[in-house]
Image 1 (cartoon, helix red, strand yellow):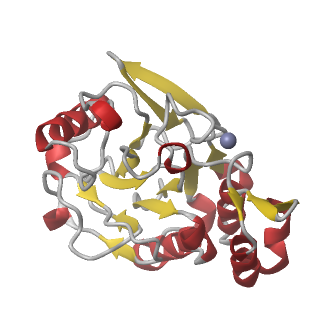
Image 2: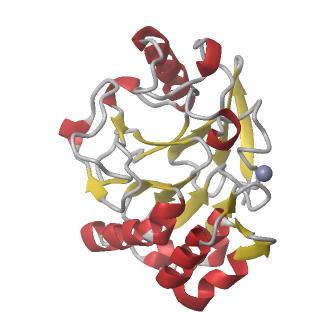
Length: 265
Ligand SMILES: [Zn+2]
């Protein structure tokens, strides 16, 4: 299993061969039409970019992956742990879901589910046996709330997925090289996960370095997803500002990248 970089014209995105042939992808900054602080493949509806640029960016990204941008379902993220089940009526051109949700799941084909990040961790889930899919946004608060584990549990409960069939791709996000925090973050992880959080928390002077991808991977393992079915993108968004949006590097005036997955048949 591996993350692979794909290019269509000047659009650059990544896929996990673990999820193929399910339609999915992780966007980068490269290959859109937005300008200034949103240059160029910005997918953030609420940041001040023009509707024309956003529409064209979605059209290009979805088009490259074989999805329909007019049927997208976009998470309205609030660093919570709500998992929203979406259906055919939710597919619409560039509208966020009505209620806040940091994870989206569906068993309906042809609905591209979108979650967003600019350092936070994004995770795509697929159960090839039952056909259901999910998209998860997990910053440190969502990680402490174990949102990825809750999302996997909802796939099991609602669609009859089996943990041992679930495949997961943990996308680009801030790495332990750059995610330096105060003591509140490791404390929240330990309260949530107990001793199993410890290998992903490292002290550096008065601060801590936290491995969010590792913590989410651990939660998936604890949910029963086999190790060989969890792919982890090694790239850090804060280390690669020409390729990714990074809140730590750019502040609030910037775009976002996305992770997208849809049930294919
Ligand atoms: Zn880094």
